[in-house]
Each structure stands twice: as C-alpha cells, then as structure tokens.
Image (cartoon, rainbow, N blue to C red; front, side, top):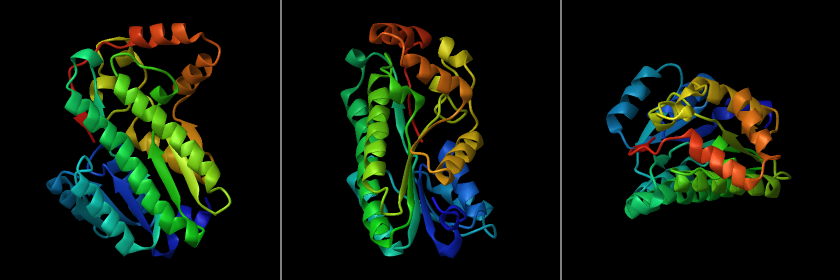
Length: 269
C-alpha cells in the first residue's frame, strides 16, 4: 500500500465494520488520527454517537447504524459506500463467535455466524473492489484469526468461517495485485475484546497471551504498508501456526480440542 493511502491523505474514506467495540473501535480511532474520514458501522447507536463525539476535531467520523446479520443492514452499508465513492480502505471487523459442541448448538445461531463472518465480508469486499480497482488504489483488511489455520473443536463454525476469510483474502489479493489495490488478512489470537470467550476460556486457551486491540491495529497497518497479504499477530501465535506444518492432522485436532473448554456464549462485535 502506498504511503499516500496509508496516511489517509486526499480525503479518502475508511469504512470500519464492528466499529463500536474492540478491534473495530481501535481501528476507527487510529484511522481517524491518521487523517481518514471514517464511516463507522455497528449495531449500537449510542456507542457510535459517543465515538463520533469523542473523535470530533481529530477527524471526521460518520456513524452508520447497521446490523450486518440482516439484508437491510448490508444494503445500507453498500448504498452509503457507493455514495461516498472515494473509498480508500475497508476494514471488515464485524463478527460473531459461537461456542459449544455443534450437535447441541442453535442452528439459527450457527447460520447467523456464517452470514456475518462470511456473507457480509464477501459482499462488502466485492462492492469495495468495484470502487477501488477502476481507481487503481485502495485497500481491504479482513479480520481472520489464528484459528483459521486449523480445525477448532467446540468452535467449529467460527474456525471454519475464519478459514474461509483467510483463503478468500489470499485469493483476491492475488487477483488484484496488478491493480494497485492491497488486500490483507490479519490473524490475531485471543484478544482483550468483548469476545472474551477465548481470552477468558476455562481451559488452557484462557492462560495463553492475550493481545490488545491496539496491538492488532498497529500490526495490521504496518503489514499493509509492508505489502503483506497474511499477518499473524503475536510471536506465540506465529509459532503455533508454524508448528502445525509439521504435525499430523490428527494431532492438531486433538491438541486444539484439548486446549479449550466449550463455552455457552455467543458474542458479536
């Protein structure tokens, strides 16, 4: 990504989903500070309005209340994106995590997780690229996860959705590499966000190092400037992914099933 886009110069817009909390909130604050006009998308109006007030003077933040689990919510973001036109950066951060054994889970919750973690990412990325590719500039950051690299018992649909995001991001990054557009999959491990079913898990997972949202954002923007396509955040997480290359799949499945206790929570960002 060239430095002009990275610094938010030229009055470009950054669109951040899941902007009211956690990593999305940290992205919104940092991108506003860097000079972007930010379209902050989330479900919770009061949080978005408080964020816009907080950042007033630091940069332009436009709140957009939208639930990306719904067709209406996605359509409202697409409509606004088309109206803005000069979209320099899209951050697909909004997501949901369900936990527990799949056979006993609510199918509606699992399908909703697929809609938000996959469908919304695909549709918003498609719309952003239709703006960016003809302009030969812009970037997309998709929030994957360190669990995208292996199956994760007790979090089966969540891990599978992040594996999709990782593969999808790598593929389209290759497709647009000659068009001046950057696409990055950022892969953090457990982070100190509202999705605390990972960082506060009763199993070994909850005792592993947790990242701050600010660490994830800093790493993502640096990786984008360094022309990375995939960035695993945190040395410990990178070592775990590296070790997976040398272990039998059966061992990886056993190991991942052993490190986490099945929670009974569904958390959105």
